[in-house]
Every structure is written in C-alpha cells, then in structure tokens.
Image 1 (cartoon, rainbow, N blue to C red):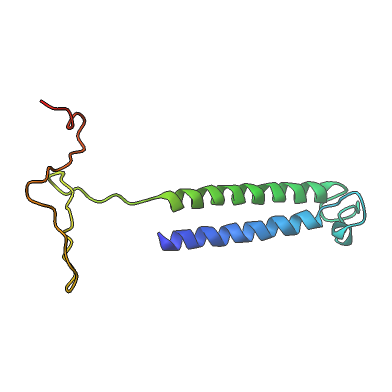
Image 2: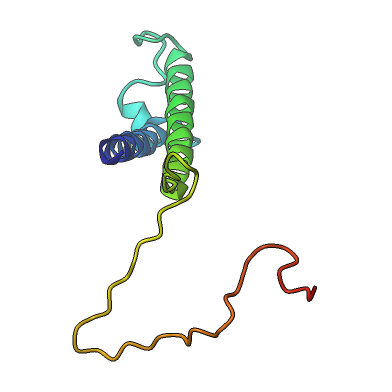
Length: 124
C-alpha cells in the first residue's frame, strides 16, 4: 500500500509540474513564452493552430490526471483496514497488562457492566 501511495504522489507531482509548464507555454494575449517556441507560426510542426490545440489538450489531460490522483490519494488516505473477526465472528479483545510500579485501579466486582445493545437500559 505504501508503494502505491508513493507512485500516486509521484504521478500527481509530475502532472502538476506539467500543467504549470504547459500553461506557461500557451499563447496568451501578449508576448509570452509560447511565442518563443513558434506557437503562432504557420510553418511549425503542428500547423497554424495545431500547437495551441495540442498544448490545450495536453494541459486538459494532465489536469484530469492530477484530479484523478488527488481523488485516489483522498480515498487511500481515508482507508482503514478492519480487524478480522475470526472464524466464529467474535473479534478478539486484546488484554491490557498493568504497568509495573503503577497503581492499578480496578472496578468493583458488583459494578454493572454497560451494554451497547438497544434497549439494554430499559428496566424489565
């Protein structure tokens, strides 16, 4: 489980850095970093508007990957493994040993035991 969380965190970090980089590369209203790579040139690798479409689609894919990894980390963070109830269905209760040298306070033998069953506090 630890390796899975680590892998998801690495994927999330790489997608976040990719989104940041691609947003900075995209062509905006003014002169930006995207113009340095020929995003507006018609003779570029992707065509006249192909670079803008490629950058925006890649940004959307990386944003979706970031969103999915965030949800996966949230789910894995809230996951708590349940204690096995055993063959008979009774969960084992761990016995706590008193600490040596400490005064142990015990309940009197005649004290009623509180039950969590519904209607247990109703007199019969």
